[in-house]
Length: 574
Image (cartoon, rainbow, N blue to C red; front, side, top):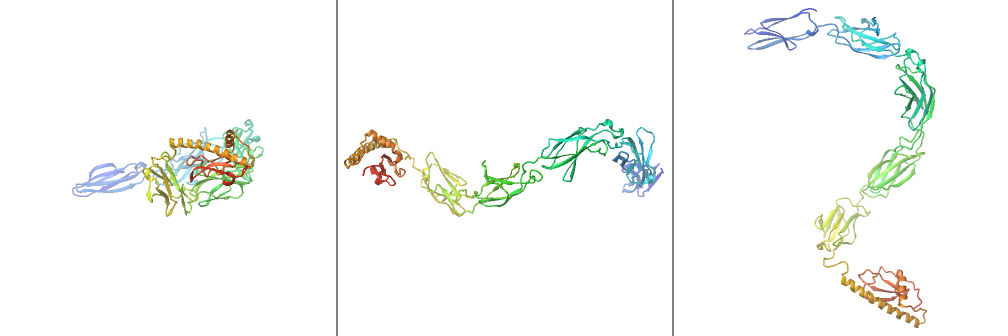
């Protein structure tokens, strides 16, 4: 290469010293006023930026120059086979640096591995493309390849040797005795007889895998075995479809063997998949308008959907209500629902194989238009010492009203405190005598419920009977029974005197008659035998009953046939 000399001058007072740099690396220093830098036999590594600096006590000045040393191209890299056949290989590569002189051509050489004789597949005058087809090769044969570039300066270095092998010839024999088994909805197993490789030519190589080609309705697909075993499974098939199948043997090349015999089979059908686009078109306070579309998977080719089943349940309930069982339409209006309640709706399609995979949605009905609210119990809230009272605020449909619910006691707004506990639409009152006769009601927005009075007995009183009272009642009952026996004897005597056909009965027989006719008491829910005891009126004979009146604290004897409404006179007396 040539020698290159740079000259630099710098003037100033005092006279400046001159410094030389190559890409920030100092090359020379110390000369005053004028200096030169010489590069002997310039080479690629001398390429770069050269700087001359003049320095004195007053400051620094500098100048730069860029040197580009043109040399032959660098070696090519990444030499590979882009495409191969049994008699050719297409090569590709990446050029090295052109070193400031454009590449104007490539040379490609090759040889059969083990040979010392290189052959030229391409010379420099064939252009500067980075691909080359090498033809006239032998099947299933190893070759060595190298490439180098050229520019105006000269030819570069060759690439490293790349070893490549051509493909074998196509297999001359294919598999035989193809059959199928284990046919399911989306898969089928194939088996065949292997190729006798001893009958193949040496340049055909060996079988590496098999190709299973199948088609349905003029749509073709291919699956490959993992290795040379003489069996494989087709997957991802359509349900209820009839397929035609052949199998080819493959070696390392791109060619197939002759095909096997052809077989055909039909896959199974199944129940349908989920319906699609399940949703609602309208949600009201009492209804859900549900809509959906036919399943993408109807269960097989040409399999029809026969109908749909629609079920729903409220909240966390485990019990579903079947709304429609076999409807053909893809919509359902579910009515009679509770406002502001979450519902789960399940829709299931059905075909000839049965009901399929269910799909579900959850929807909450709208809040009802509030026109009235009711407080339960409606009139009196009883509170005992060991049993708090609970009042519930509900809409006219029996659902909780929308929040917030305002509770009032004696017209004052209350919340949980002391004897009162408020939880949304429920108010609980514990025993507290100061709340006796308090008036409670609930309010939502501007709507007010009925008013309920709190009934709390004082601590000194008892809602039951004392021991003395119970003893007095017992004595009264004994006395009453004695009087009843006497009265019955008098009645019987009068009937006998008046010509009636009444058979005399002993006291024991009368007692038995009383027991036999207790169930014939008439309207015994209206009166109590003894007020405050809860003991109902008891018939003593077929047409006679002894009872007490709520307004009279004594015993009354009435002829049931004449005095008691609805009674039937089955006796013979007057």
